[in-house]
Length: 403
Image (cartoon, rainbow, N blue to C red; front, side):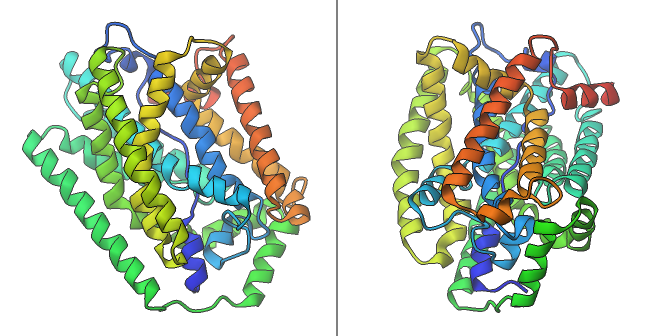
């Protein structure tokens, strides 16, 4: 059983990518006369943000098991670089991806209504396929993938979209209340010191697995500890429901549109999200480690709203050039980019690849260079890929199967 320190580590489980099962055709139904590329840019930003959290897990000696066993460096460390990564990325982009997934669901629903189709209809097949994608990705690539949790949440929220607005609001705010109550109970339990220590022999075995073990041995380890690795979407299911429905509400309010009303909403998100979220986040970071659940699952979603507003303002003011085009391309190939970043990090860090995690063991400069290098590959690679193809390879497979 993980101890008190590892409970804090477990809360820093990685963030992952998949934001929407909406097709390109469905996205074009968004009700804007002159549409900003904001949604794709946000997805691209979120991909690199999730990498900013996940990269510390790959680069730690304990690998994917680090957050469970409290392995040093499995999360960010106490260096300036580690603190900066924690402040900027921890929990923020998980929340952003969840909201964007809700936006994609709202786009699908609107498209279905306009075409007179039954809802949720075939969307359940999309969710089931997403669940299968998540299962394969979890087993073969990355233990902390949360596609399965998103798929289950998508089915619940899709069903709710046919209900009255009053019923939707009731579910949304009830989910938030349950989430806050649950996080409060966890924080109180940690403050009471109910955790137990981690056996150092288990720690040594896990570190040896990721330093010298084979890929197949790591697959077996994920399967043997599947429930532990699935804990985040279980614990945060009410938060997932709330953020999904928040994404639906923001989309319907026009928060992602290119008109003046959308700009006003984004400015309010920027002011309130960063104005409240950042001071709260800093205060929780400065407090005892038992407050980490509050930091990741309470303060971070507030900061995330500020991020959406900030990215929206940048997209609105900047001329579309190479940088914005690269983020937009990554957003259009988000699923492929997410899988690729985890494959690259695994090959570079784990023993069956280059084994650099055992050599550097979360050295903050190594982590920073690794994150920047993989980010550059994703941005440049997606840009080049879309010069020849309309979407990413993983997205192509998804569409072919669903078709």
